[in-house]
Image 1 (cartoon, rainbow, N blue to C red):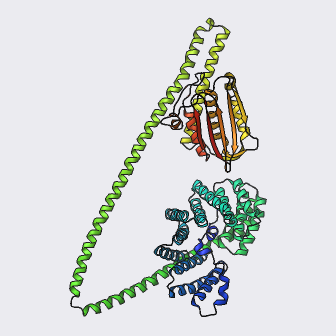
Image 2 (cartoon, helix red, strand yellow):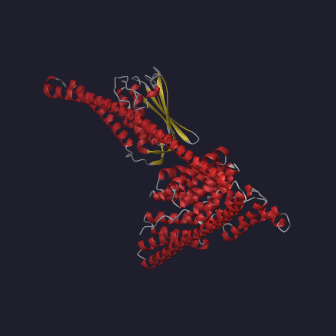
Image 3 (cartoon, one colour):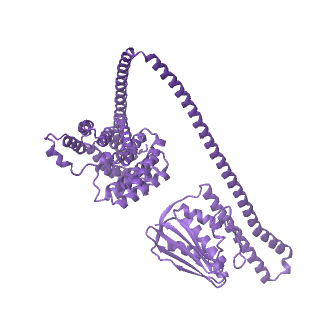
Length: 630
């Protein structure tokens, strides 16, 4: 048996937007005012009671929120009404009544839209998205969060923007789109750091641990869950319970059952204290797996029975919520039908006293026909416009595809031509040596062999770059970023190219500090260094120097490869990293190349989250600088 990931309801619970989650810091004063006759003070006090009880006694909180809602309706306070509808949806969400919660959140969002309240709209979009996430309507979830994020950026609401990124990461995680989930949660973490919000930061660290767990990167998940557990400033028992369960599951996957059991028992104790069914369900299955792996079948069976019991309880609760919602809809439909019947009878009675009623009905009927015809024509017009727009997009994509194919054809023709040259040289020299070996002395034979060696190296480097580029294009190049020191990798590359430099008597100066690190993929970084330093040697004059420097920036490091050789013309600079226009030219000793190396460098650096720039003056040399995240 393998432990499964628990629902992210615990996470979602804390990500309900501030329209629901935040309380007025001065609400305590309403206790003394509630006994008076000020209706507004009574409404504020009811809201204060709801805020105080929303997590511990959500049913009581709903009762007080409804009382506060009635006060706001009597006073025609539309903004307060929208806020309280959101709060009622929040406590219904906590109780698992997701259908009712969706109804309240939707009403609140509609009212905020009527009021043109941007912050309320952004919060409402986030709240509705959370319910849609539970219903697995992921396309609508993503659309709502993106709309909310756009509004948050415009109104500079960093906390609400962070919660949207957090919830978006939950959605992508559920969809198994882990790269998008990692991007979203890292955006949320960055915003938490900007705000200095420890609570939100730790929630995101828990989510990041779960994403790593789903990706089966168990050492990374252990690190993230451990950071939540070890935080002295973080006292949220729900998230601590989840982090302990994550530590247990990660340890179990790493075959460390003793550690897994230690964390699992702590999580189980907290889950019982909190009485949260989803946590109890999750940790029961993990404990069953641990004991099963330890051949303790009695306890494994006991916890598996608990797991099934909690699963059935959650299912029953969800079914009850759905039935309650359907019953509510039925009652509302009956009320609307009664109201319609009453209105119809009232209208008929009025029409009997009006002699012109028949002409009015005829006019209304005619108007209805005209309206339906107009709407039909408008729909046809809109449909035609949409079809034309789609056809235009398709035509544009076809042109792009044709251009891409033409570019690749040209690229492969150039590769074939450049690969043919060293092979032709090798064939010619081997034929000469094969047919006329006795005509040449030892020195001449060594010169032939040196030429063969250079041609072989040229062909091999071309094929190596071409293979790396092909792997990147087909997503088969394994990307494994880690925190690595820069200096050993630079030294390794210099040793690899040492003979090339000695042949031209070029000095390579390494000015890299030994303690500078970056978050990089080792193989990609070595390919980039090899190509940039090789180019610097190629275009440097004999007896010249090549300098390698690294500068530590705020959130990244900058690596520069500097030469004083041929340089690059200003007109050629924009062509260096483009597949359809890259340039090739011989080095100072007529060394040949294809230009694909710089295209490969550009793509690898982008893959690692960095960028590359060039400063060059023709005849004076070049500086290639690329940045990478720390």
